[in-house]
Length: 203
Image 1 (cartoon, helix red, strand yellow):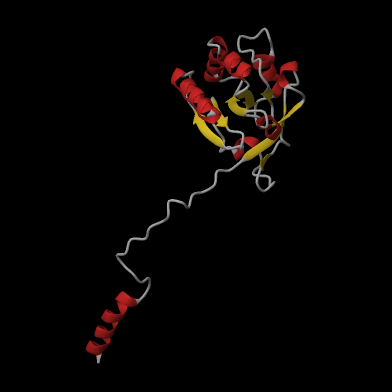
Image 2 (cartoon, one colour):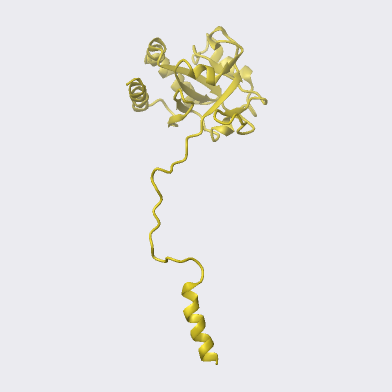
């Protein structure tokens, strides 16, 4: 009796659970997660360069793609990127072509204030003076899923996976982040990548 019961268990085990052992399951390459389309509205430093007291990313993208620069007033790499984008003529070139807008956004709003952003980046006497719009989100600033209209997170930076500084995000006119750079210091090769994306988008 015990021998018969043991034989029964042995023959039942392979048929229990999932069937089709050893078969490869192919997942279609056509099934891909759609990129998240993120927009937001943020206060600015409200200088003449800032295009108003607030900026809406969705509105800006109607004009052209955006290069979003995440910075801190105490970040040496952020200063380096800002200075070189200006000194090497990239800002003037992109601005004159109307193919790319630069937006600088304050990253660490939890423990840095907008006054320090004004002192470092907004003041024309500063060596890091930034002649394009500077965004200074506050505790009420939220990012929105453009497709659903739903709030994505407690802060704009969280919606973008809390980027470190400096970080550069290339956002196309569909509100998709299609390229990122996190080199701490200015990198001419990454500038070339930005120019290549602009050229491809223009084709």
